[in-house]
Length: 267
Image 1: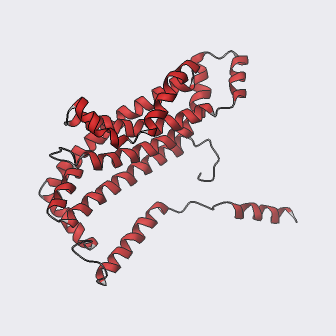
Image 2 (image 1 turned 90 degrees about the vertical axis):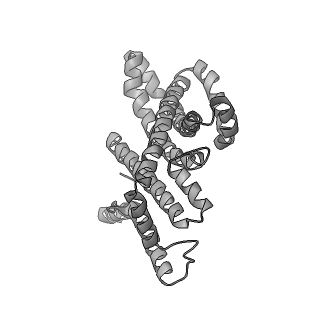
Image 3 (image 1 turned 180 degrees about the horizontal axis):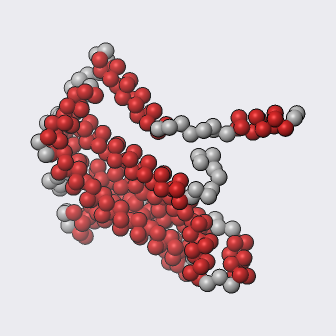
């Protein structure tokens, strides 16, 4: 086989060039099928309203000020818990991944925490922290820090020991060792954990905002359940979905920029 044939065969093994806005194809297709099924009368409007009905409800809730207030409240809760969880996950992963003593003290505890369903801790945290905002932020922080810790720690453990030996031969200081070897080696795993943490913060929020809350998207959906307002529930789910998609896309964009030196199938 000549060289041209070999090149063509190699190219066929690749996924190909990235399509523009490819991640929107699935959601758009889902909306189209939903609209077609609603227009054809295949869906019960009381259970699953048409997309245009949900859109009208969303506009009404935005106009009367309900939706903006609930969105801001939810963003504050998710942002506070995410910031705490991100910091805790990174610090604990570095302490455990760079020190055998730290690993002995931290890793087993985190693994135990991982094995316990986080939402199952809600009753205990209510007893400890009260039923206000503090316990909600604490639960979100736990949901976030676990995947960030696990993936960052795994990436640190996977750094080739030959790089460590090379750093010792070159006489690198601890700071330069962390900056030039540890950080680049841990970043791929960190970004995987970051994406899972961002998604987890929204998943935890939708449950927590239904517990002794007076505002927020989860509270809005819970109140809508009491009155059978499925359109309002779908508005809340749509906003959660948009936030999740946008935040995940933002993390992916940052990951591609920061790790632009890697040659991978997704690049």
